[in-house]
Image (cartoon, rainbow, N blue to C red; front, top):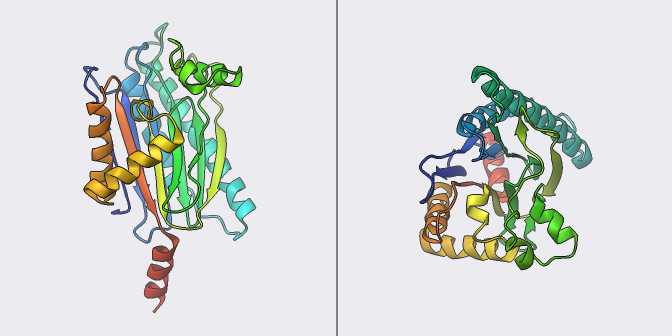
Length: 272
């Protein structure tokens, strides 16, 4: 669908791409699913785990029926439960890859982030340090996820973002999917869509070069001014920018253009 798109790239330094994404959307703009998984480089064949996990999560969510209640609280609960199931399916898929490989001592593993846009609500689940952002045209931007990582723990202990990022263990994740995961349960967040904006779901290969929320929003606005607001060229521009900044990791950028006014206009047209 033209309001959702993404790009998954191996970057400049890595020989292979261990990121994966799976996207789905409806033509009327009422529902979209964006899933990104980042394979753990230190575990062999993590590219297979990431791909299997992203596909399993997206398939699970596309099979979920729309909630019957108009209540925002009920919708948040409904989609959180659906995302919990999607994370469980994604973990089972990653574990299944390990089984097909003979259950190696270092099993393939990956991060997980999935976002559902359902009408005027975004609901997100994540495990690891892949991120989701709400970047509205007007109003306050928000990083919807909080990394499960040593970097987050360092900042919680009092270090500044700059000090934490300088630590060699900053990107060490503390939660992931896979056979050796101690805790693969996701966390959840939601965001009401009150006006037009962008949902960005990405791996750390992108946000590592724009780790502050203000930097990510500025990057998006600058690239829109340069390449326009088609999600795929815009995601391509984000990936190109990350590669130009060094491309030291695989890079995934998935975007959804959320505009309640356009969706309502389409609904009125279809009824008329």
